[in-house]
Amino acid sequence: MNNDQLTICPKCGSDACYKTPISEVAFSYFCFGCGYTTSDLQIEGEFDFKHYEETLPELYKDVKHIDADKRVWYPASINIADKGTVFLNGSSAENAQWCGIKVRKVTKEESKALATKGIKYKSDASTMKGFGKDFIESLDYIGFFNK
Image 1 (cartoon, rainbow, N blue to C red):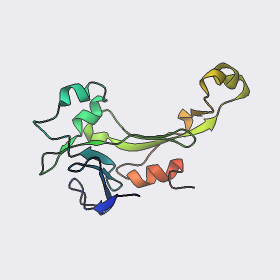
Image 2 (image 1 turned 90 degrees about the vertical axis):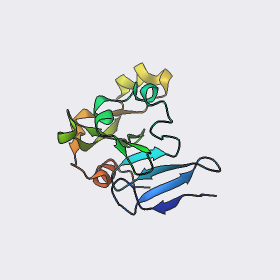
Image 3 (image 1 turned 30 degrees about the vertical axis):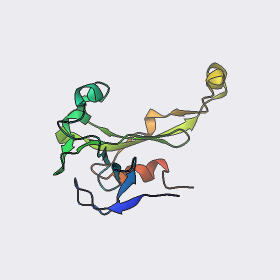
Image 4 (image 1 turned 90 degrees about the horizontal axis):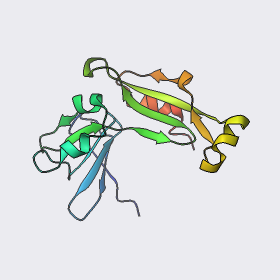
């Protein structure tokens, strides 16, 4: 049973924010409007953000958003093995944009080298395309909504 609810995003105001229960009292949030995500556990002053941010790109730290309930929102990164990757890209918050990179099937030569790892697809950097602030378009570009 899916308990997701659509709610208004506290970051961007979109009505495409999914609120999903992660416990009896806490929810995770993922907004298709702005591409940001958080949870009721990621509260400023209560969560160990220093440790959490150790693995995040500097850009993601620079563009994080704190809402009125002190939840800290970060850009999502979406990676679908047979479709591609969507991520926020840029050298600063001012020039950040959503990008998509499609994948391609590995060649026979690559397949021999990767066979033991079970890798069938590889990111194709030549397909990287920017979409400005349009997260939905970047998802559409990699085929996220295709069955």
